Image (cartoon, rainbow, N blue to C red):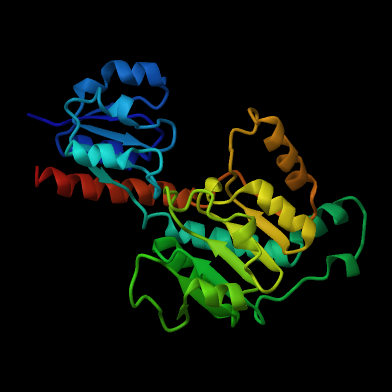
Amino acid sequence: MPMQVIIVDDVHPILINGLKEDNFIVDYLPGASENEILSVIQNYEGIVVRSKLQLGEQVLSKGSKLKWIARAGSGMDNVDVEFATRNNIICLNAAEANADSVGEHTVGMLLSLMHKLNQADLQVRASIWDREGNRGVEISSKTIGIVGFGHTGKSVAKKLSGFGCKILVYDKYLENYGTGNTQQSEMDQIFEECDIITFHVPLTKETKGMVDNIYLNRFKKSIYLLNLSRGKVIRTKDLVKCMESGKVLGVALDVLENEKIGKLSEDEKEWFEYLIHSKRTLLAPHVGGWSKESYQKISESLLLKIKELKSKI
């Protein structure tokens, strides 16, 4: 019998059409509410999600026929992978598909931050011509640390290699991962030498809140910080404290600890106000991996992986 699949988030048509051509029965319901999805999930052997739905134990336990979950993106933090694995539900993602997008976005944010491009643009539009106040800082003389050296970390390193900077990379779960233009390092070396730090790690129990006041003050120098992984990797209140103290010179954040900015707690509102009013911040709405090209590449990647999986189950 054809395998039934529900897609609950917006995906490129290449995935929908490709699955149908391969004899899958596809229900494309990107506008469905969580309750609507819960009421029908028991009918499907496969589900494709992006960020809309949290696939925890409560949801997955209702999917009695589920054989696989496909995440249209890289991180799996909205999926209870442990529960899925225990129940023989295979988890797929497309971590490699948006690596170029995140890599370019990282370099773009870094250049804008170091050369004050956003501030300069706003000032000129306001008829302010302040050359000295917008003097930039070059990347070429700096040491940059990349924490997390998976697909996106490697993409960032590749794109930075032409700037002539020293690139230190750290990944707890890899061995022999240094390349011609990067130096495999321990965190002690990164804390000792880096001027700039950029995070490209998944959100796990281990990385949640990893970057706190203690972590940031281990850096010997004052640093510039970028986060294009997950917002909850950084304790924002501690980041703000370190910006106030001068330990952190500037930040570029594509992600926030709480991205529901219309529903912030009083404490969260305080740090959010600091970030949006600081001249040393650059903020984006979690779009680093969401380029026009990656939108298609993610669906292409998942289509190939789902087809391959189908031949094995």
